[in-house]
Length: 534
Image 1 (cartoon, rainbow, N blue to C red):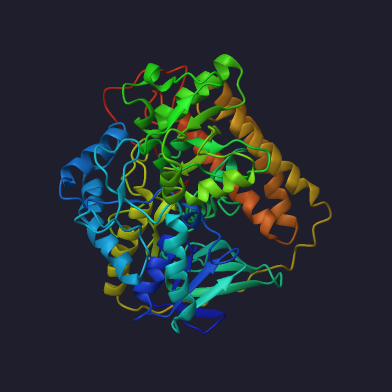
Image 2 (cartoon, rainbow, N blue to C red; image 1 turned 90 degrees about the vertical axis):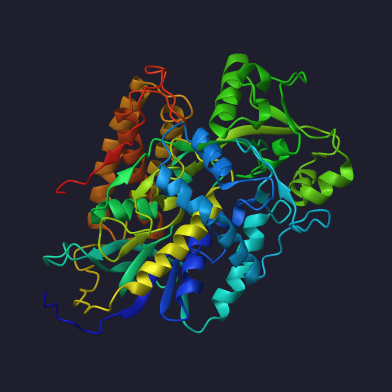
């Protein structure tokens, strides 16, 4: 195909949308050969990866095996994990950790271990296989990689920039569906820029902010999922939203997670009177997978009219807790909770999206030249419920796989990309519309599409989403784009995809629990949505 070319706007070999572990791993592995741009809508370390506490699952211990890690993943995934994807990730787990160690990540040492590093255990794991940096693993990893990203001459870091939409051949009137770049709003200037690229990578994370209560940072607004869907990508399994069982319950503790490792090291979940309740719900008790624990907490809270339950690890030595959970100890102490002597008040909160844009082992989407890595993607690894600490591992494995595929691709001519057209829009007259719709969306998603669902609740959510979509579409067409408007537009679309997938699943499996369909069907099938026109 003959495509006219022109140096218009800014051109890069690879544009990466998102600066979490997946995005930075991609950038650092590509930058020796490619000119790379990282587009991140706030600062470099504002993504969810930086918030990860527990660690990274990998087969490292001598008494652990690849087969056992695969089995644990499949059990947690409620029969829906893709076998090839699971094996691919687990078999590459050691190499991924070794790469991070070479980068200088300061994982917690253990002189008594043959490995030299301390491994912890989390819910759903049959072995200690979680390598970590105290209780702030994500922060330690991200700080290490961020220093390298900022200093690399071949990486252009675009902070305070938010991607609006992908530029595909279909939008340009070409015969190809391929992706050629992206429109990006510079939040500092308010101007929309056009970036062309040989390859574009969605590494923008999940969509936790679609819910009222979440462990996710404010940037988790489903941007990549929405952009990929609008560009023509399939999405799958969006109904499987993992609610982390233990988010700190305190009026001044916004989105603070209490890592699963607290339960892995012997923490008990208690009712206000000090009674344990998990043994009544599952023989694995506090070490059951997250979906089981979150539903159990939700059940006890609703049954007894509780605002929260309690996580108690005060029976462990104070020195042990301060060494292994320094971040949690310090934060709780700031709020008047001494975890060495008191239980921690906790509630479930939206934590992780197991579904997303459908990708293959090389992180390729349905759109040529477009990749998706990390929480934005649906690789098949997580099935109906993500096993604890498999997510950061997935980021590294698929980022490195995408790098190999990108490096194999020949360079092709780039078409002329039209500049963003603002000729028919004006400045917004009432921005209260955005904040009101944002609040309404998050509240009804929490009420109707939460831990326990019914057909009626899903229908109510779908009706409200349709009304919001019409209002936001009209607003988007008539007014200049802003960061809040872009995020709201993406959140509403992502909410719609979640509800549509949930309505199609007529069973209870993993993270999707329906009172109307309480049983699990004999055959596990993915819920795949295809955009109109495919």
